[in-house]
Amino acid sequence: MPRKPAYDRDALIAQARDLFWRQGWAGTSLKDLENALKLKPGSFYAAFGSKDALYALTLERYADEGVARLEALARERGPLGALKAQPRLVIEAANAPAKACMLAKTYAELSAKNHDLAQLAATHLSRMKTCFADLFRQAQAQGQIGADHDPERLAARYQSDLLGLRLSAERGDVDARQIAADIAADLDGL
Image 1 (cartoon, rainbow, N blue to C red):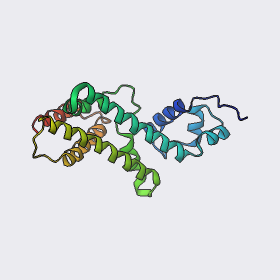
Image 2 (spheres, rainbow, N blue to C red):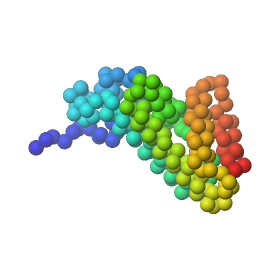
Image 3 (cartoon, rainbow, N blue to C red):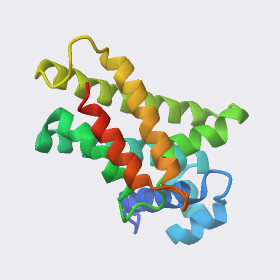
């Protein structure tokens, strides 16, 4: 009978996500992963198969957590309230390894190489845009947004604004909090 691993796979995926998010795909070596996760090479390969396979798991975890947070925020504050709160929350997340979006960072890093992980990141970005569009539709159905607006177009613009905001939050010469407030205030004019 095979031995049960002496590690928590979910915890290791979360640790790897944070390392990849901070350092990127190319900036994270197998040695970095083995050291951070406290796994020997054989155990690493038995647990995850490859660096790319683990990276794919971390992208999925990142996207799943983002969707879950957004859905919880919508239950708490309503669809428009969630959309208005999101910009401030993403740049003020104290425990995040970086302010910039991991999905966008991955896409930017790997798309020129035609790496499969770039397409996976793009798929997760599309999934997030769909969540935003759903919230815009719900806000529209509640009369909080005018019926003349296209929720898909609003979602694409909103996602673009958030991605730019998150990248700007990495810079010391930009007032990201003010930009977040402006993004939220712009939603009131819909």
